[in-house]
Image (cartoon, rainbow, N blue to C red; front, side, top):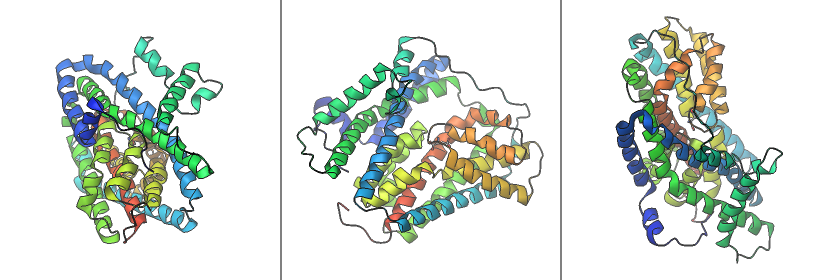
Length: 412
Ligand code: ASP
């Protein structure tokens, strides 16, 4: 799918000429400095950032819908391909969990943690009726939301304005077939996505500043062993992906990392693989040169089920808390952890800290106290970002594997 929107000029053109990952890195750096300078006062900077992420989240479902419709219409999706996708997703997730359990058993992070106290309850968001949060509430959570019984007129207006402006770019496009219609819909959706993606570096600035200001780094010392073990596990998973790409696809690992760095940096800075999804897809199509079919199957369809970083993290957290409490998990119990982690990771939405919610399932399966999950919240803002980047790297890997050993023709 190509972008048909009109060429931006002036300041916007210059802003877009800087690679996205650089713009995001600048956002992170400025956010770090502002968070440290303002402390807890930086909390309010999170709201505009959440707004941008919310719009991206609302745009993801129609994007998936239209991509699948277009792929099916062009007879790109076969049953064999779907089976292959399922097999790839499952093997990658199982390897992730195996790595997680292996590292947790070897490193034994629970042995070095200096935390014995039951965790505090997570802080509640303080949102009152200030104008910004009212605006925030008016932004639809999904494209269809404003048209339901609970919808607001403001939501309909938002959608109308967005599509009205986006369609200006393609208003002379002739629509003669159903395929043209889907193409125009997809093109205008992508035009809207590009505007929002332009705001991502600013959103990143707000999120980073508020998190550093409110949470800071102190809990990293107490939970240091756990943080290091998780980072090691995620690093090993990344090595596994790159090895698989090297051996089983035409893509060179270094070219791949270079091609998808916008997506990886965005995943790290937003903590949301769903918000990153459109960028991942574009990187795979435009920079790496995968076939449309492979990119949409891996990055748009597969992405919803593919959260290897989350699976690895959930399995490791269960083992960590067990070690902390001096409970020994038998091999059978670790197998239960693995099995429930697969399910829990599939159920985790691609939004920040979703993994902590589904983690309760893994804890309950082996009778671990779920209260301890809240303790992980203090370091989760960083670990979430790292596992989200691995989740996106998983989508990228699956797309490459689906593309196979030979490069497709441009435009495939
Ligand atoms: N934040 C992760 C994602 O968007 C999900 C998680 O919390 O593990 O992929």
